[in-house]
Length: 356
Image (cartoon, rainbow, N blue to C red; front, top):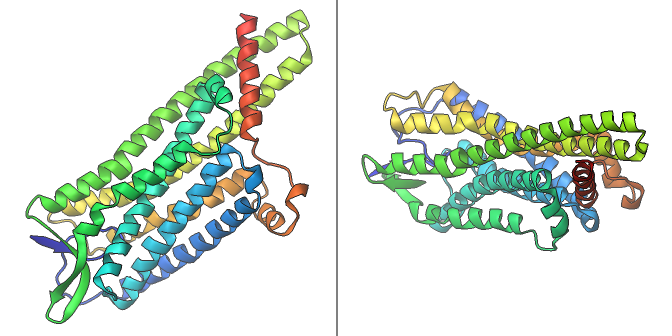
């Protein structure tokens, strides 16, 4: 059997307990994790509060953002915060039950944050590439994709409860560690985690985004010809203007999901690369400062998501203050309501079919 220490990554190879701790690196880790934890907690809590105040007016897109905030808060409080305390104390302080619970919630946060982005992107794919189906579906009170994302997260994280436990790592010294069968146990665990939390989701995201961009390109090409025909035949201007408006609305929501996906890949790609390197290469510099910092920076994704949403909502700082302090009835939606957007898409495709 082989064991490894309770790192935020969950998969750091065994270290030598006799090796002195790098206190300078520990201080950098504590400072970085502290900034990420407080930034993520404040940003996601504020945005969550704003969306909750306007829960009766939430569009489908804002429902996804609401649950993405919840997922990022799970990351902040159950992944970043425990690691911050671990770096301060250097050992896990708590009973076996708490050890298993924390490790379970760490993976829940990783799963939920990832798969919430996946289902949000798939929903955008449906809205752009199959607008008539989305239009007929309308607004369901139960958002099935969101439920699926949470179900995958809660069920997929169950093995953590049995993998990790509070064990004695030295005479009289206990920690929250895991034990694996040599030599393939740890490699299998890390590879499987990387596959289901990063590789498969990223593949799905890329396929959806490519198809969305392709659909928009075809639609814009069609609209360009429609506008040319309208100018020649003196067609009503309202049709042309509504078509242009639909393009801007779709492109705005697609741009936001593209940026969220890119932020996810940028933050988590180094993390999983380092994880795979650490278990497949016996000579990997796991104690190197750069190696450690790259693993910690993955949690920056929980800070980036609310900023991206607010940025695409317009007037980033001012908008948040207004939403928190003013009456919600006085505010207008900055991102188009899903029903309005899908209805316009339906009209657009209907016009395109009639023009043929």
